Length: 409
Image (cartoon, rainbow, N blue to C red; front, side, top):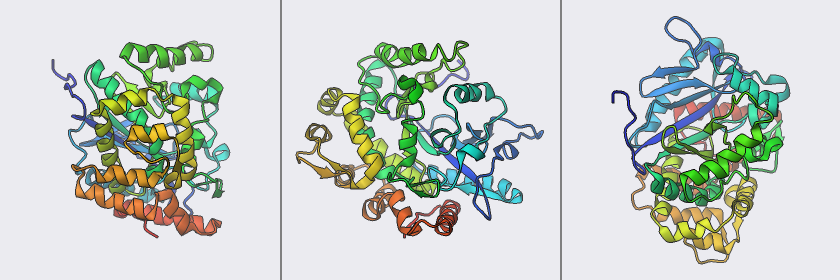
C-alpha cells in the first residue's frame, strides 16, 4: 500500500538520532531556545522539521535539539557528512541568536534546578506527565544528550536474536562511548555520569528503567508481558489517563520499537563530532551482528541475568575503558578464555575480528583505544577542572563539532 514501511530484515535498516545542547557563544551556558529554530515556512513552532535526509526535532527540554535520519536508511556509510552538514545549518540559525550547538553527553556546568525549561508545545502533555511523576529538574532528565541507534528486525526469530545480542554487548558500551566525566562543575568519579544519572532517574517506579540491561526474552509476547506489561501496570496509579502507556516509556538501555520493527540502543553518549558518533555506531553494529549470528553466544548470554550484566555495566559506567572485567562466564560469552581482561582489551579483540569494518571506523576506534574514551580525553584537557578550564573544554568541544574532528589532547 502507498506509504507502507518497507520490510527490513536484520541489519537491512538503520536509524540514527543525535542530541545536542544549545549554548551561548560566549559564556557557554545552556540557552533554552530550540523553539527559535524549529520553525516551519510560516514561522510556526513545530516539534519536527524535515530537512531532506534528516529531520530536526525537539526534546524534553528547550535547550536540546535532536537530529535524526528521516526514516530508515540502508547503510551507516556517509551519514557523518550528512549530520555534519545539518549541524552547520543549525548553527547558521543559532548564530544571530548568539548561540551554537555543543556536543558531549552532559553540560559540565548546568544547574538543572534553575535552568530547566520544558518544551511547552505539541508534546507538552507527555513532558508534563513525566515531570509530575518523576520531577524532571535533575541531571538524569534535563541535562543529558545521547545517541540512539535503531536496528531493524522482521519477525519473532530475528527479534529474539537481535535482542539477545544487544543485551550481551550493552554492558561494554560505556567502555568506548563514555563522554560525561563532569557535573556541577566538578569530576563525578564516573566517566559516564549521564548513564549513572539515567539509571536512577525513574527509581520511583523501578520497572520503567529496570536494571538498564533488559531482561532475557524468548518471544515478542514474552517481551510484552515481562517488560511492557509490568511497566504499564506500575505506571497506572501515577498515570490513570494512560498518557505514557506507549512502548517508548520503557527506559532500558535498549528498547523494542514494535511500531517500526527496530530495537533502539540508547546507552551511547553523544561524542564530539558525527565522524566519531558514526564510527562508534558502525563498530556497535558489527559487534551486534557478530553475536546475533552466534547461537552459542546467544544461548550462553540468555543465562546471564539482567542484574548480573548490570553489575558489569555499573563498572564500565564508572571506569570506562579502564574497567577490569572479571566475570569469567561473561568473558566466555564474549569469546574470551581469559579470567580477567581490561575493557579496552576486549574491545580491541572485537574490533580486530571485524573484517568488514570500514577503514574510517577502524581509524577512529584506534584513536579511542589508544587515547581513551572521550571522557578520558576531556579530563586530560580540563586538567584541574577549574571553571575556566571547563569553559575552554566547552569551546574545544563546540569547535570539534563544527569542524567534524576528534578531540585529541
